[in-house]
Amino acid sequence: MKDITRRDFVRTSMAAGAVATTAASVAESQSQATAPGHIKIVALSCSPRKGQSTAAALGVCLESARQVDDRIETELIELADFRIHGNLAAGVVGPGGDQDDFPKLAPRLAAPEVRGIIVGTPVYFGGMSSLCKAFLDRAILLWQNDFALSGKVAGVLACGGTRNGGQEVTIHAVQVSLFCQEMILVGNGRPGPRIGATVWSGVEGGVLKDEFGMTTAKALGRRVAEVALKLATA
Ligand SMILES: Cc1cc2nc3c(=O)[nH]c(=O)nc-3n(C[C@H](O)[C@H](O)[C@H](O)COP(=O)(O)O)c2cc1C
Image (cartoon, rainbow, N blue to C red):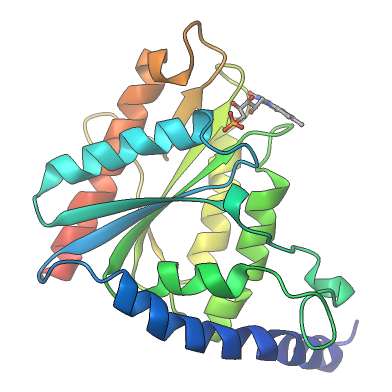
């Protein structure tokens, strides 16, 4: 595909979604307003299995984020509730094509009170879930919408069925996409800085019994909240 062709494709394929997003933004920002002076940290679970290990571990991140300061509100969004089409190049999304739920999701992430986003994905064959990739690719709409995620703090969690199942390479792959959105990536912070939360669902008793993984989840939630609050109040 030549450059000019690709640019044209992106422009036309995003147009319908952009209109829907603008309309939805108004409604969402009215219904999801946070208390004055408060900021919001959103965790986005990219598991197709609602309420499972990735979502549970993200809940630990959010609990830790709330403990940083009373002004921090949190929300867990599960992509399992949305239809997200990743096959942009096939022209599925856009005028004449099937519309997905991304325009409903976008304003909940782009809202000004959302200062931090934690993306959590299961590890599938050493990488992110296809749902996570679809979301990240579809988020080109936000990139094109004047970098709507720019300046928001981002952290990443990966949940594998084994202890060393590819969590770190998965986190890194997600981070690269978020860097392109001008997000401010953070890891776990001191005392033992790591690139994100690496959790293991295969441990006896389930992911919340993964003692090491839970320390990384708590640390990531705390770090995202601390940096987001610092930037919001600077
Ligand atoms: C297709 C597929 C591939 C997987 N590949 C890996 C892998 O490479 N490494 C790993 O640790 N776990 C792997 N798993 C296990 C999942 O990461 C694990 O079950 C995880 O808890 C799923 O997240 P969820 O419980 O939020 O759905 C795989 C699971 C599936 C379905």
